[in-house]
Image 1 (tube, rainbow, N blue to C red):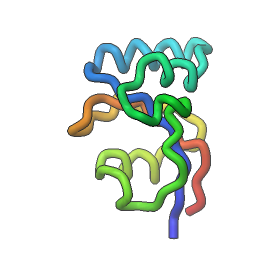
Image 2 (image 1 turned 60 degrees about the vertical axis):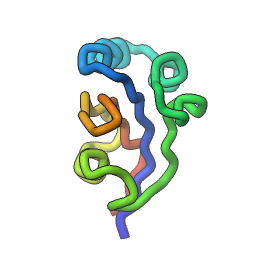
Image 3 (image 1 turned 120 degrees about the horizontal axis):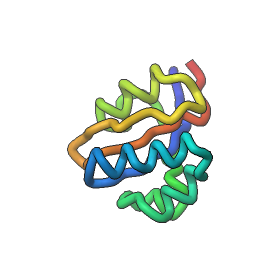
Image 4 (image 1 turned 90 degrees about the vertical axis):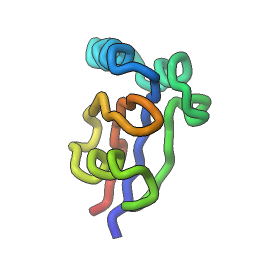
Amino acid sequence: MARATARHILVSSEAKCNELKTAILGGADFAVLAKENSTCPSSRDGGNLGTFGPGQMVREFDQVVFSAPVGEVQGPVKTQFGYHLLEVTDRQD
């Protein structure tokens, strides 16, 4: 069964999400930005969501996490919770 480890940053607007993605691509630390900006409780751990399988996260997450290249920041990804930046840190297909 496929398993993925990922981290994310959750914010309320697409504009803020794009701003943070630009900062990360410019060299800012993902975990630091997650701690400072994410509204998800995972922000305390730098956005780390741990390891999970298909169907354990919302559909929009699954589509990205189980198809995106490992180590590349993806997003904005819109869900019912807001806008996310996602990074798959490990995956076993």
